Length: 222
Image (cartoon, rainbow, N blue to C red; front, side, top):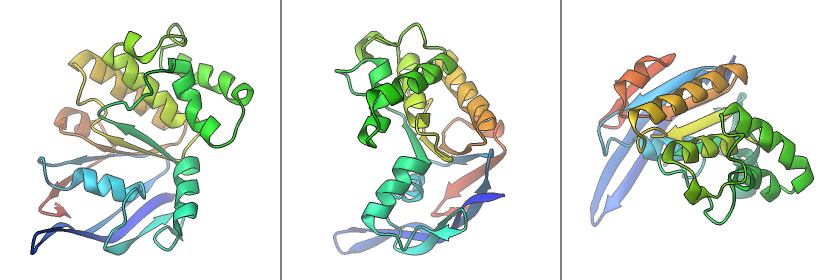
């Protein structure tokens, strides 16, 4: 079943008097439980595309559909609710809050959504156990290794049970062992939770392990 679909996405940027076409008509769809890699050279527009897919930026033209309904026509408040409830984000740099523990960081999206600490604590602990960090729940960010920080960020992305996971180079800042562990966890949780995952990566070995791999070049998928 198609969960998420893009049709003819275009995006331009302006540099002085010049207009630069970054995306030139992107089309694709992804199903529940499917993993899709987006690979391409630096500057090819991968991160711009991911931001548009996550409704953090808007295309100049084209349409996004989630569960068959258009996202493009929704207002800012509706898009904020969509991101909070349906999308999990992971970035190359974890963006954890350093003054909080791993457990508090994982709970944070739920607290922002208006849930209580009591409601969020047990689900957060369960997720930290799933990402093999149940022994690190009370450690602050600077007490965690790079791989542990990224696994905490993964748990945080999944705490509100999103349908779509968007990952921008989630293993790019890690050594090979930690990167492989994070990827294996993403793949396992993707299947267990029927989670559609779109991952930007420079790692062609990881891309080959996904269900679909698309190369972005000169603003289009090859």
